[in-house]
Amino acid sequence: MSSTHPPRVPTGDDPACEPPLSGDTDPEYIRQGATTTSTTTPAYRIGELIGDHCYPIYVGPEFGIFAALALRWGRDWIIITSRGELNVGRPEKGVPGVQKAAARVANEFADGNITALPPFAAEPKPVLPVGEVPLLHPRVPQTPRNIKAAEAADTTMAKYFWRRRSGFPGSDNPVDAECMLCGWVGSRYFSHLRGRNGNPPSITRHPGGCVSPDKIRELIPGYPQ
Ligand SMILES: [Zn+2]
Image (cartoon, rainbow, N blue to C red; front, top):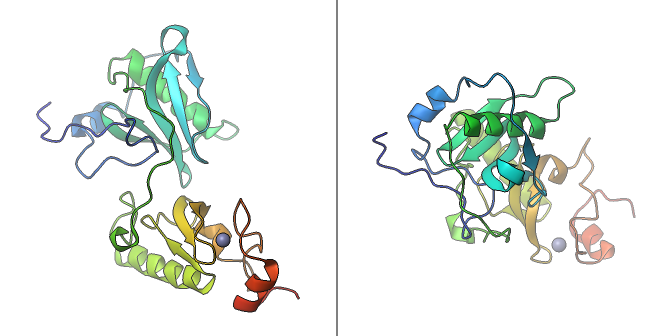
């Protein structure tokens, strides 16, 4: 491999399921990763959920080898490995996506395509400062349609006193969001923040409690009194 960018792998400083930087994924891996030579899937262990959408995958003797992170991305599943990020596609009907992702990790590891990742501490990742938040998540292509969708999402979020602290990942992937009423910051899905059928989103805005429901009703129209 002659990649000038070594793949960015999860470390103690970057424990969350973040995509590799542009160019980080070994292009050869993308090609080789399209097929595996294993005919049976080696055993693996799916670790405890990190945050709300990301699983560490362990393989090898006693399942102690940390081999990848697996996360859902839209309807697909993605694995983040020593060689970068690989989209393993949608699970077959009835198969939990994380199992599909973990099985792929086990095969990739058994085939020698990937190596162990350094251990990581499951600490919350720092959210981006307000001025540095990109419009789109690095995994979302910069198309006019996506840009328009992200701008529309920002308008809706502002209406409900939310703002993004990470790039817009689409409606059905988690985004770091800041509650403008109390300063809470955490992972939310835009599809849950925009309300439905003309109604505002849940008055229970996020875990941990927000300002009083009366205050929320005063600021945001549409809640039953
Ligand atoms: Zn709040």
